[in-house]
Image (cartoon, rainbow, N blue to C red; front, side, top):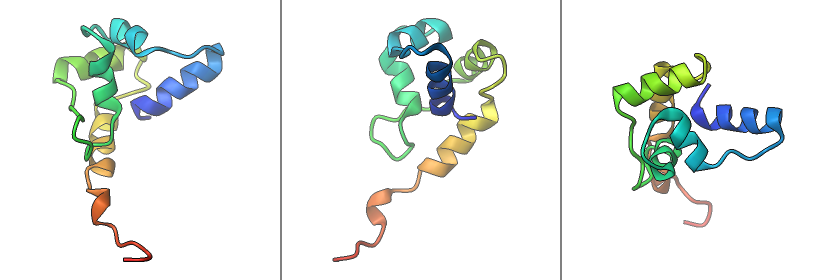
Length: 90
């Protein structure tokens, strides 16, 4: 499952919103903006693919619910530029 879905599931289970700061601490990175960049669509200008050691940390922290394959699948599914889609009026 992708990281976004995992976060939503955790919030549903606990009834509390997870902050980016909490996720950063959980995944062992400096701040929440790093985690936010991992969760953006790959075509977003601020997207950043996590380093291998970060992917492993996420996998361990989520007890295998988010895997390296999930990060690569997310990247492939979201990397296309959505602005190239035809519009109804244009």
